[in-house]
Image 1 (cartoon, rainbow, N blue to C red):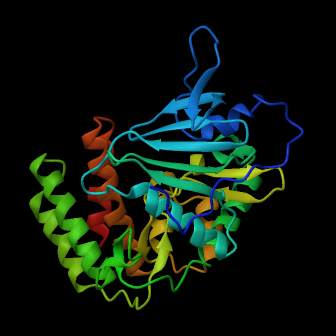
Image 2: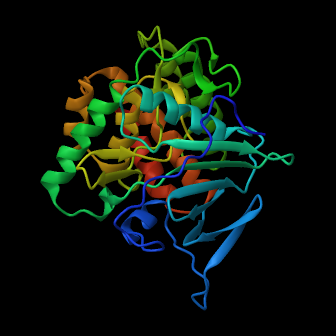
Image 3: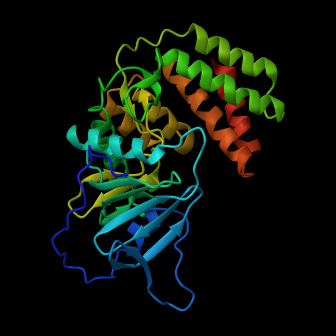
Length: 320
């Protein structure tokens, strides 16, 4: 069914680029692999009574992403039992971000079929993903733009943590209770896998339980800020894409996620400046540790460098 709160698809003015010619860097920003027909034949998809050409497609862990002539179509191939409406929440998050003046893709339509598969049609952003840029000054300045944008997302809705897709409120009464539940769930996975010690998990949970987070109203938290989700557009504006992990909480948490992934470098400092964040606070250190718990669990689940990330987590817990 269509979401009546979302605008239906509208056509864009023709760009100077010829149909079918898309910046490869933009396409690669949507994922790790670009899939093409082995014989170079154009693929197509039936849309109502007509056929649209798919110029590029990517199969991700959960979604299929198709690049059409004037837009991006994200199709939720895998339905997660714990997040059956993740693309609906992404659509809402993009709407809220756009209303607050952030540079994000415009959502054209959202649908969910009878089997529960979701589809979003959204604006195709033309530009260069920041993971393809080597100029350190441009990357740092771009992250300051990101911080300034994220700072606009305060006082959003009610509640904290996971977003109810229908009421648009958080499912936890406090930010601390969400973090405590999140940390308890995933430290349990990590101790069972012997990636961290039980004493380390207990210390993190104790610190989380006793923390004074001072958050009354939630911000919209992207929860997946990384170079590949940031595009420097032709206008020199930095667009933030891929909002399907959005939650309600503290915007400082987005900085922590970027910090544990990319390190405490100049772009991280610039992002902190944009957010006007206190990077020396105990709260920030706690956020980095909790964020890393989720990252380590992800690496364990998909059998990547979990041991290396777990060592980083142990060091962070030791500093709390």
